[in-house]
Amino acid sequence: MTERPVAVVTGASSGIGAETALAYAAKGYAVVLAARNVDNLNAVAGRCRAAAGESAAGDVALVVPTDVTEHRQVDALIAAAMDVFGRIDVMVNNAGYGQFARVHELDEQDLRDIFEVNFFGAFFGCRAVAPIMIDRGRGHIFNISSVIGKVGSPFHGAYSASKFALSGLTQAMRVEMRPFGVHVTDVCPALTETGFSGNVRNGDVRQRSEYLRRTKKMHPAKVARRIVARTGKRTPQMIFTAGGRLLILLGTVWPRAADRLMKVYHDDLARALRAPDDAP
Ligand SMILES: NC(=O)c1ccc[n+]([C@@H]2O[C@H](COP(=O)([O-])OP(=O)(O)OC[C@H]3O[C@@H](n4cnc5c(N)ncnc54)[C@H](OP(=O)(O)O)[C@@H]3O)[C@@H](O)[C@H]2O)c1
Image (cartoon, helix red, strand yellow):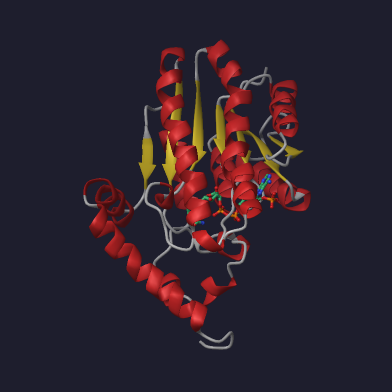
């Protein structure tokens, strides 16, 4: 078994996942990188090795090509991490994507597809790693949800629904795992500067959104640093911005006010939808 703590990160080929793997590597963890794009994973692995320093004994980054929608591949990811490093201290269920459509315009398959990645992918990760952490009596699972996994966002109903489902699963598991010494954290980033926007299905219209252009975005490295800093600590939920906290609070205690805020976003996107493709 390696002396180093070990972090498994899904969706590690870009954005928040890549930065999280990098932040763990810089803190002395061995990292296990999972996603579908192997070239990107190898590039992130190289950056993790560099961050770990040349003196690091043995390899500190393992690439395991994984489609999280396939439970056998997620089980194989966890098995590979155990084969190579002999322990798993942290699991970050981060793989995810967005979908742009009004709810009544969604295809049933769009909704099923997004749940396969954002919800079932994370569930498979939780289920595979839990027995290992329970056996050791320690460990930390971070499930990456979103501010709009707490307050439904117009034009992103499928995404919001998948993240609400994930947050519910995370909250339940958090209490279940406590007697076993395992922490489970619901991570809710606000808008973050990653490839996410470009990967939103049917999301080209978002490029014409004034609101999205003007809104300040978080840097994924900041999300990553905060996750690493909370590792091993009892942290039920992470919300990174004051705006996110306010929106979630309003959504719970004063939904009409939250709707009003969301309507600003809705109207901007509706305008962008009506605008011709070449409009600024
Ligand atoms: N960016 C934001 O504004 C924001 C805000 C709140 C929450 N989040 C959440 O943060 C997480 C990371 O997103 P990001 O912003 O870093 O976006 P990103 O750069 O697009 O990263 C998404 C990651 O998920 C992976 N992925 C997608 N489908 C997969 C599958 N079937 N199997 C395995 N991996 C898969 C992608 O890798 P491959 O394509 O190589 O498989 C990629 O590494 C997501 O869960 C997202 O919902 C993002």
